[in-house]
Image (cartoon, rainbow, N blue to C red; front, side, top):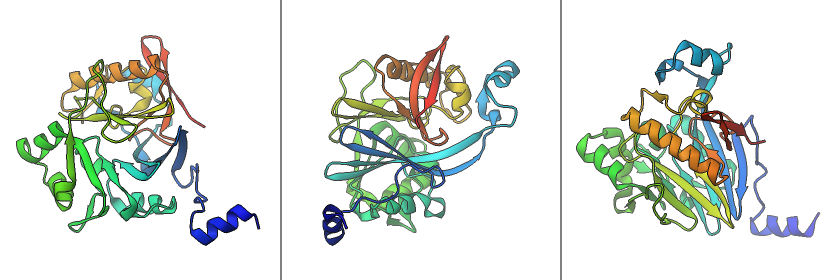
Length: 286
């Protein structure tokens, strides 16, 4: 047996066997010292009825005749000295928790949970029967998002999900594009992407000069919204603002050569963004 492997077994530091695997719904992308795992919680048939202003010509051009898929994703970041979860999926079946365990991370080893916004398919795994799923984690979300969904227009599910974390709920003010970004954790900076919800946040990950944008719900039907970013979804609370920030963020990704990962982009859920006419194109990673 290889000496390094033997030492790893003795001290419990062998890396998990699961890396990128479409059957398991796990895709690994490394940026510098970060291991970023896209976790596909579920996949179902997509529905173009959620698109606002997508006429037949657009749908015929971009949607395959056989239909398309829609997924719900979360992101696990293994960073030096800490494990970070970005969004938690719906919580259905405990799938996200089982996937992080498969990657050698126990729920009590999650140090931080970053929430892009407070819709149920993004915070669903935070608690089970009133108990924190990630008991040692701090939960980070934008102050605007917390204010809106727990005071202005109360989402009882969101309030219940956050309740077990109490003072371990940390708020921040994401910078707008063009402003100086500020890290909330080493190598992770929030960017304001308001429109889908009042405090919707995109996270920029950076390690050793490599970067990744985790764009949350910037896109719901990627096949259409990359090439025609002006088309929003019925889920977007401010559809005009959502369309505007979508174009801005995608333009930022192109100009800075930053790949993007999204919570509703099908496996691998991550890829490179380029220009395509007046819109954009998305090339999934392999």
